[in-house]
Amino acid sequence: MNAASQGGSSAGCRLYLITPPRLDLVRFRDDLAAALDAGDVACLQLRLKDAAPDDVKRATEALMPVCHAHDVAFILNDDAKLAHALGCDGAHLGQTDGDHAGARKLLEGKILGITCHASRHLAMEAGELGADYVAFGAFFPTDTKEVLHHATPDILEWWSEMMEIPCVAIGGITAQNCAPLVRSGADFLAVVGAVWNHPDGPAAGVKAMNAAIAAA
Ligand SMILES: Cc1ncc(COP(=O)(O)OP(=O)(O)O)c(N)n1
Ligand SMILES: Cc1ncsc1CCOP(=O)(O)O
Ligand SMILES: [Mg+2]
Image 1 (cartoon, protein in one colour):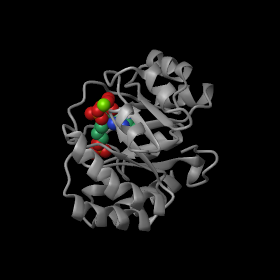
Image 2: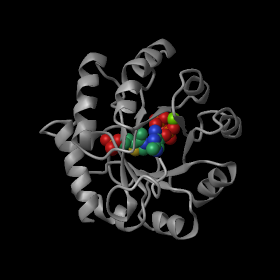
Image 3: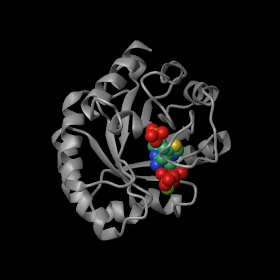
């Protein structure tokens, strides 16, 4: 998950996939394998909103091996303790997803990402706490989630000029609109719809995102 050490596309920016909020595990496992076969993906975040821990466990057991077979990190959304218990590569926590400092200790040596919305202050706090990346957004309108915070590319420029810690851009990002985010210094572009809802399927979605990042 370190942009500099993992190579990849132009300016080191890479694709960060997030699962749809609800999924049919059997079908999604095949979609995931096709997406990861299609191009460069840094990580997959399992984001099953409102799923029971047992369902998250089943999904992790089905999907994490697919990710690891493709050298893709597997990150769990919302729950650092469950991420630790399931042996995930890390967790992504929002501002109301529990104790960030406790999560940092629990996930020693693993990836911890923190949502910072459009706040420089939250990003500085996350950096001081030892986050492995900070996430800014939403940059564009999205159908995937109701968003309360809206970010603009200048926060990516500010962060990447000042800090070594990678930053992730999220929210309505597509192959058509991502270029300014890449040029502003995003280390990762996190997407749901652009890949899983691509009209030609997830493999085409990954290829389109990789090409757009490389051309930015
Ligand atoms: C990479 C990345 N960035 C931001 C988010 C949003 O996290 P959060 O604010 O906790 O909202 P939910 O995802 O829990 O709805 C994310 N998941 N991933
Ligand atoms: C989880 C999340 N947090 C802010 S926007 C968003 C959804 C991103 O999905 P999409 O790439 O489909 O807009
Ligand atoms: Mg959350």
